[in-house]
Image 1 (cartoon, rainbow, N blue to C red):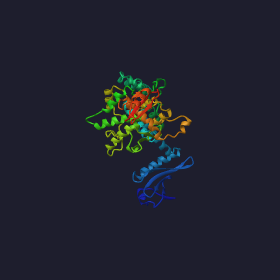
Image 2 (cartoon, rainbow, N blue to C red):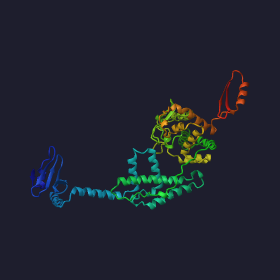
Image 3 (tube, rainbow, N blue to C red):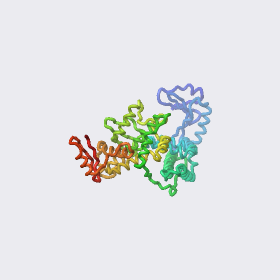
Image 4 (cartoon, helix red, strand yellow):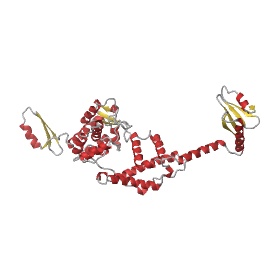
Length: 455
């Protein structure tokens, strides 16, 4: 064990090691030493606490004088002999500092950390929806320390969110109960963020989650709104004629995106984030990887949607998104409020993008397609044991997809309906044709026939 009277001159003469470390203990003060390594020289103290040797670093040589380090060593050794472990004291101070910082952490800081922590667990568009909720309904709370947000504030904000939406749409029955559902949803987002803070800042002594509404929750009413059959002509006309002299590409993108949602039943963000590498023009399919239930969805394209996408692709250039929107950071369409409002004003039809999915599902069910087929088309998980064994090839969905498209186009007044006549009328028509004519007709469920004569 090397010993040395630790003075400035003596420490300067001590060479750095070629490998490892070496300790030089002071000849005047027991427990005060110099730890020498390959790059640095540091002062240390060492003594026993409850029978175990404890060494603590005071600091590097040159930062303070040797005499100051010696005074520190004397005080530190005295404290250690009294049973105070400086390592534990340092940990306690760090915990207290972190707790103090945590007690002043703001909602904005926690939400930023929440998004980073959940980025790999939640879908991108879910996080975007969360961000929209926070910016719309809790903007004035973002700089507020989390500990200062009380249950009373939460209850008041819950009611205010509902009241604000109800007031904005007081003359529109389409939005009835929407404020209540949005208020509940907003509080679920806030509750999730606060719970994350409780786990992350467990030493902060944060109050219990203030979202304890219980009996104060509004009753969740599932929306049942669709674009009805009698509304489709006006809606389709308004969508098709949507234009913008200043930004024609944005209007066209909105138009095509809405038509895709109606004729495929995709969710809003499933369609919005679609990229060209997920569209197969040869196989006439599209594939969505990021879905609500986590299962990859591949759908056959109705012919007119295939043609619409092909036209978009021909004009797309190098953009990877099918529905690009350069003015937003995501790079694709999100929620074009202005254009949606223009369509609503032109058509007189109040709708949301998700109403188009419900319209698709309602149409599919009205055509008496099997429940299993409808579930596959809209990517709902099957619950039956037998259904779980059925593997559906995308081609099996093509015919029902075209049936739905034909029905919607006919209802919109775009595709003429087949002329429906009785069987007696069809026989008479056939008899009156020349022998070179090739009649064909489609029997319908009520015993009539749709006649088509090729001559």
